[in-house]
Amino acid sequence: MKKQPIQSATSLPPSPDAERKTRMLKYTAAMVLRLICFVLALVIPLGWWTIFPIVGAVVLPYIAVVLANTVIQSKVTPVERPGSLVPVSLPHSSGVDR
Image 1 (cartoon, rainbow, N blue to C red):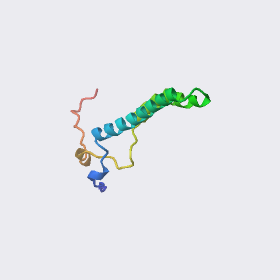
Image 2: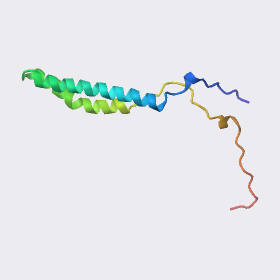
Image 3: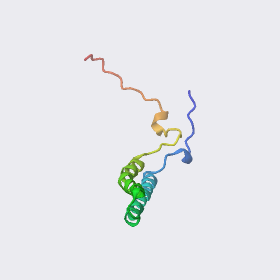
Image 4: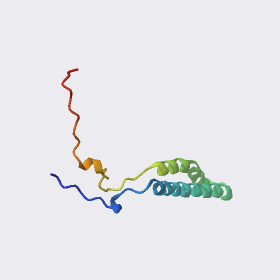
């Protein structure tokens, strides 16, 4: 019989609440940077350099959504349910062919 790896609390993936909080922080940081770009676009006198904060204010929402929705899976062993350690027996057929 194959020896099963031992699961530990440190090999479990992050909880959904912790993952959601991390993604919300990334999104909020990107939106704060976008707000700074808007303010800079209004404060900086018109010139060719004004294009940088304007492009940042336009492109950052897309980048923020992509970063917030990207879930990075860490390289941990998959969590096995206890039932997978017991071999599954299939029910016996009644002898009737279908």
